[in-house]
Each structure stands twice: as structure tokens, then as C-alpha cells.
Image 1 (tube, one colour):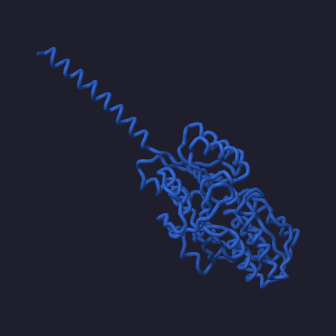
Image 2 (cartoon, helix red, strand yellow):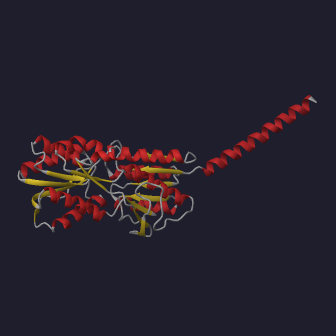
Image 3 (spheres, one colour):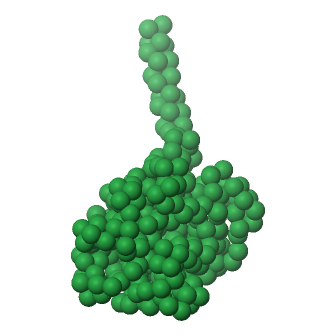
Length: 336
């Protein structure tokens, strides 16, 4: 009897171990991973995006969802991060490319091996399944410029800032700004497309150079999230708050002091939190074998009835309606 009990216990333990291992393997097979790769970590814009990624992760605890990014705004570092993630067998990538062209090769390989690829701020990305945009980029760039023109009374020198010359959306925005400015023939564009690499200090230094070179300049249209902070600081230190117009992409909380002083005239933005959630929502739909269709609701504010059209390559371009333009009188309605 004692031997039988021992044998029974042994068999039960063996069966439990086998079943447990099988259940563990099944759970591992069911668990999918999405990693959001941003241009640079540790700046307010992408910190805000990470809150959206984390919020999406909380509603999908069965998945491994996270955000990473290089320490500096460097396309080579971002490429290496993506290469490393693919080597680890990531299921889906949600990427905000520093330079879409540099990523084409690695994203083509990623999709060939079955990795879901979703991008943001890169409507020229050919090797992506879906590029998610918060709004029509030409409309946004023109809206920024029209607000600048209003502040400048349609006359005077102005210039533009971009995170990098390889940043697709930034170049679209300033390009649309230049086109819009043709409606104001007395606006004179000087020294355009200053690169800041999304660094407020670099934007500050370049703005000071421009103010020295063009002491009569009247306006700045900026693109990267930190540009308005650097340019606003330079304008304020020069005693030109309220005299030189600064309109560009920025977030309400970081920009608040300069909006109040008049060193920043107005900011345009979309909520990076919602963009992070939208990218991950699209990635999950694709991982689950679903389709992205025109007019669908992603369940994310600003992306309730999206427009879907053919993308630059074989993928899709998805456009939301998340644009916001705010100034000193309205920015407190959107504090983050």
C-alpha cells in the first residue's frame, strides 16, 4: 500500500508538471508583444506618449506592451534599437521614425519575418503596414503659419525650425507654411529649416544667432516639440516677448510660462498620449488578424472616425482629427 501511494504521488506530480509546462507554453504562445520606439527618450513629448502606451498596456494585461527610445535624437541609434528588438522576436513595432528613409530596409525585413509594423509621423514610409497620423499634415502646417501671419500682421521677416531635415512631418509642416505664406506677399522667409534635433538648447542657440543676424525678424515657425521652448527663451531674453511672434508645435505645460509672457504666441499639437494609444490599438488589431477600415473607431479620442487611404507603399495611411491650436487665452484647457 505504501509503495502504491508513493507511485500514485509520483505519477500525479509528473502529470502536474507536464500539464503545467503545457499551460505555460500555451500562455507564452498567447502573450503578444508590442514595443513603441520613439525618436528620443526623456523629453516631455515622448514622456506624454509613454503615458498612453502605459494606459493601453493596463487595459491589455495579457500582452507585453512598452516604450523605448534612444538617449539622443539620432537615427542610427533608433535603427540599432529596432534591430535589437527584432533579434529578440518582438511581435509588433509601433515606431515614430527619426528619419523614415533610414528605417526602410530594417522594416522591410521585419514585415517579411511576420512582425507587425505601425508608424507615426511618417506618411512617406513605404515599409509599414499602417502609418497613423493625428491629422492632415499640410493642413496643420498651413494653420501654424496662418496663426503666425496673423501675429505678424502679414508682414516682415520670418524663419522656420525643424527637428531634422530627414523628419518627414516637420518638412511637410514648414513646406505647407511656406505655401501658405504666399497669401501674404509682404512676409519674407529668411534662413529657413534650422535643425534643432529636438533639443531646446540647440534651438535656443540658433534662435540667438538668427536674432543677431536679423534684428528686425518678426516671426518663427517651429516644428519639433522642444523648439518653441528654445526659441521662446531666446526671444524673452532679448526683451522681444510680444514683439517677435513664435508659433510652433509644443505642449501646454512646458510652454505655459512663455505663453504667459508672450515669448510664445501660440502652440499647435496633438496629444502624444492619444497617438501612442492609437498606434498600439492599430498594432493589436493587426496582431489579432483584423482589418483597418475607413471610418472605423479606434476607441481613442481624436481617432473616433478615422480616414483610411493607400499609403506610400503597400500599406495604409490612417488620419485622425486630433489637431489643437492654443494660445495664452486657451492653453489651460489642455494642460498636460
